[in-house]
Amino acid sequence: MSSKAKAEKKLPKIVYTIYSPEYFGYKEIGTTWAYTPEQVIGRTLWVSLYTLTGDFSHQFLLLRFKIVRVKDTIAETVFYGHEYGREFLRSLVRRGTSRIDMITNLVTKDGFHLRVQTTAFTYNRIGRHSWKAKTIRRIMKEILEKSAQELALSQLSQEMVLGKTASDIYQEAKKITALRHVGVIKSKVLKIPDWVYSGEMMPVEAVEAERSEAEAEAPTS
Image 1 (cartoon, rainbow, N blue to C red):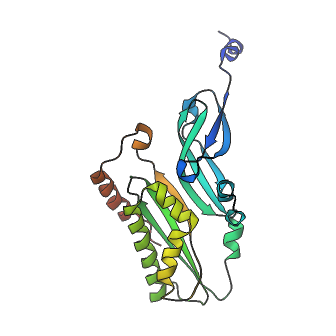
Image 2 (cartoon, rainbow, N blue to C red):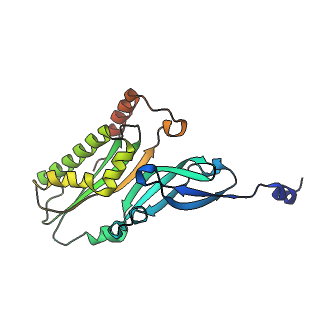
Image 3 (cartoon, one colour):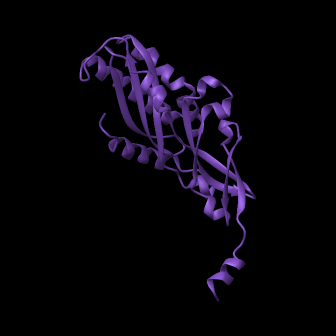
């Protein structure tokens, strides 16, 4: 059979409507074309938080979603990461101040592996390796690890992008030095557990084992 005949027999592409997860409102966030549902699985999409909340103050924050299942022509997603917009992040930098970063690996209560970057901007300059900077990084790490142990991805992702995690860190870290801004500026899902695709929940013991392994592999800030 000629290549032309094969092309004529190929099925037409179908448009699939992409929806955010229920914990982000289950809203239409885009479309994608494919010949089969299997081709859609795994595709990702970036949208601003403003698109989901309608709050213009959220325009600087970008969220990434990954398609994990397809029902008819609806593509359903999970949270796959987020980051501050570059311009907004650049606007936070000031002369005579310090930026304190902390990067850590987490495993959520329901088995998602993430890498998270948290940043604090001070009013006054402090040494990168000073006891103040080290204490603030420790506070960031402890609060994030505690949240991951207690929360599923659906809850943790909301707290990271809507500011609760940053607020919890700020309330503790401000006791160390005056802070101008604290934020979880970036996250990325490193591994999606199999139960997301199969519908079966991961055993708690397996999650705990994977959490210990992920923390051991966390990059040094």
